[in-house]
Image 1 (tube, rainbow, N blue to C red):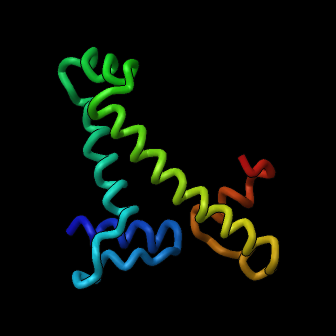
Image 2: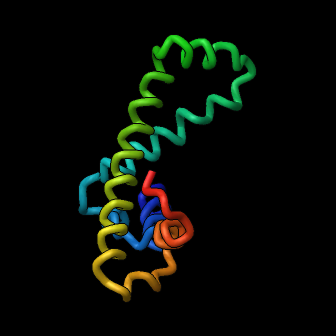
Length: 112
């Protein structure tokens, strides 16, 4: 079910096919990292926020892993946005895309 949900989100939001829905395909690194980040972010529900804030300050344990996972997901997304930016620069038909990255990039001028 998790693979199906991730595939549907990527397909409709970003118009990329992660092929996570096909059970015979191996797990996607992006899907795995996204899932791990989601689990680690549940720390905000902790009754003792001091513990995870201290871990974040010292960059240890689950907070260190969370930072690494978010960095990996961020790299994939930035690569996807760069590719989409190049597509938009070379063709006029891609300017009409209605996916989220194209909409965001159409509304901003700064690549950063």
